[in-house]
Length: 176
Image 1: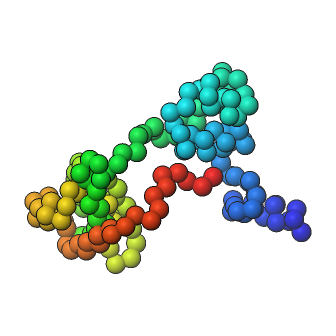
Image 2 (image 1 turned 60 degrees about the vertical axis):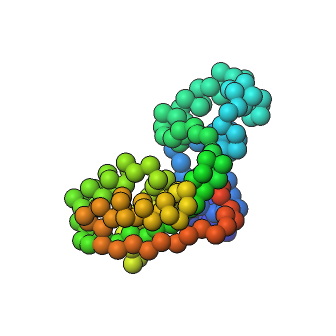
Image 3 (image 1 turned 90 degrees about the vertical axis):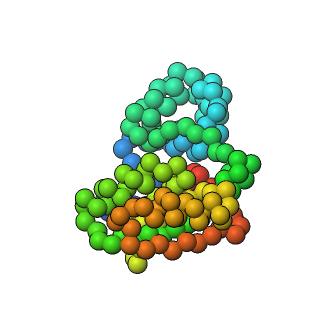
């Protein structure tokens, strides 16, 4: 039965959470270990990373370059404290456009990409078209942002704001 299940997984591409089977290009257990470690601390040197995966620096360096070139690693960033930078007022804003077609969607997303207060934007299904994550100084700043920035977008039909009262979990990594 287990062989049939594993064959089914290989054929359908579905993953079983209890197995370390991945349908990704050429990632092996060491590649996945490197990705897990980097999600926790991207500032490790190649030498430090190599020690953690029990390889020498050269093969780890080559693996890193391959993971970067194939797009598994998009970029390395520092996670900042929004409160200390006076940007800790977080709002999720669902946006419904007046009309939706390819040109309008493209125009809207290009505008949103240029707005620094919008730190995340998702095209979603359901009663709204987009979900925005916005960082502001406070409620007054957010009100001004709505009136002077989002409110000037012609294709915007309606929006609904949800204010974050407490952050329960914020994990930047993905489970692999």
